[in-house]
Length: 433
Image (cartoon, rainbow, N blue to C red; front, side, top):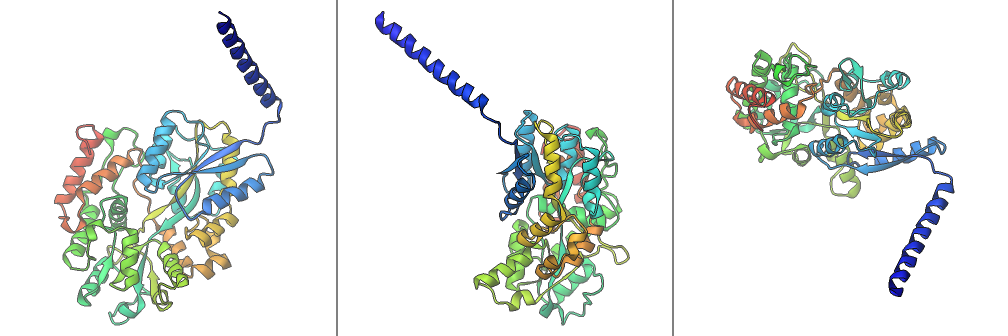
């Protein structure tokens, strides 16, 4: 019995200690709100911008970063899972453009204040605004915008008879590469890269993968893959695959693999993002690549599908969304304005190689010194086309990856019909990917 009383006393003492600690904590002045920014992996640029904007906030808030998985599809999965559980820790998130409609349609994004929207529309390339809009409203803030260029080795192309100062078509570079027994590096891996390529070809031919963008009922989504522009896109893939210009391992080749092929000189042409320039320069600084290699790099706008129609290059990048369940949405939106301002955008371009969504940044002297192809990137972004704007993008992209892979086995007409049938069945819940 005495022992039991001692246990009660110990328990009471523990309660008293906890109460005292709670009282002490409640009497202490609360610190500034901590805004958590979920970022895609990079070279430390977003963490540096978070520190800059924390300093600029003057003590009103701090920004902490939390890194998402490397693959865009895995980033989406993690964010969707947490937002579906009303996770209030997600204040700001870096979102890949094609997933913006899904997040908006699901109610995962906090309403954007009018003043923030006005600022977010200023000085932006049109494609970044289009990719940030859903149902006529700007729902995320454009941060950085990426696009692919046609890269070429100047020494190899000099004898091919191509004028790279003029627009070139896929057929022209395929024919030139085949005649000169060289390669065109492109992304053939079954992944998002393949959807990017297919979409760019369809859009460049004057079509769209989804013809009724904005349709909220998945059963009513209409596809344009089997229309003439889609058939023409499939023809380009077939021509590429049959011409013998694909690098070894093409069905598993991604952006990094292609950068290596181009850097080694085995490919005279490549479609890829501007990161490959920084990759080559870093190798030179490390002493693993001679300066003569990047000196031999040339760049031009993305290839056309038809001679008389400008290409619609891929659009990538990152937009900034504010979580619908954040405890501080106004501060989070204020932070997005700082994160995406011209100074931070130029810094991110120079330091991490990610182009800005802001037009003015492409004439920044530091940007031009580091990326002499910046004007071509800007022009490409001005005519770039987003991937299908739909709340069901994951299903659409998954269907394309299933049916258009491997790209060198694509059959115009048959592949288009197979893709249309699969995606339609998935959207109607009649099939699974």
